[in-house]
Length: 330
Image 1 (cartoon, rainbow, N blue to C red):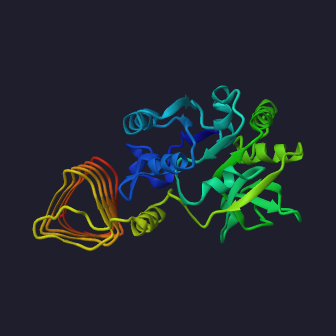
Image 2 (cartoon, helix red, strand yellow):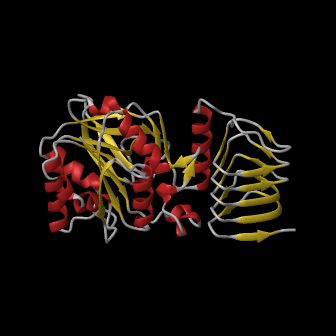
């Protein structure tokens, strides 16, 4: 089985952070989002990876080359972002001869037993019941509990089962043929070539799809959800208190602190992630994410996301600040 991970999006909902780094590299609970995805797939025996890159793609490629030097991986560049279906179609040459693929969107965090999807005798879609399915691709189940219909962002949903960015496809060539037909005929939904339209084409050709319910799933596209995800993952960590102690500093677990940080006279936690080489002095920080090389001095932060290489001095606030920023409130 080969994993296909689309990471070409611009991450506009998470700006200003995605102006300088792609969303899959945003740190959560001590490591980038994409690392959680790769590690989950490795746990269930997936060994071959295709990454579909685009916006700031060289940063994703550089990270994966350094963090996973022995991973069997291929990078495909999507020059025009014309939908998820188009992204998969762009990688079609990398999928020649592949019997099964597992598609995982590169900006989600999930807590699911992927082995149950992999061992399912049918193609399989990860789903979750949501309050407002109009924002998602939606699955409708038949009396046999198989998927009878998939619809992209329906105005009047007939189901509350949203597709959560996990797709196991057994009939790879059929999927590529269906997407290719949609592209040739310029068949678009909401202006894009959707993967859901390709899946619906497969169902109409007789391909059977099962569904698998995912309990914990986060689309890390907004500050609030990003921080909620950070909290959930930190709560699940085995070692919630850093081994290293810091001068006159109280740490309230769970907290994740990167290497080579200079921290003193501060209170950190709960639910705080701090990147590598950060400096924090005389500050109180809780429920926040602090990027690499950030400097926080005499600051009270809560429910904040602070980008890498950012400097803040003298503040009591909730912030959402991108990379390479300097703010002085003293």
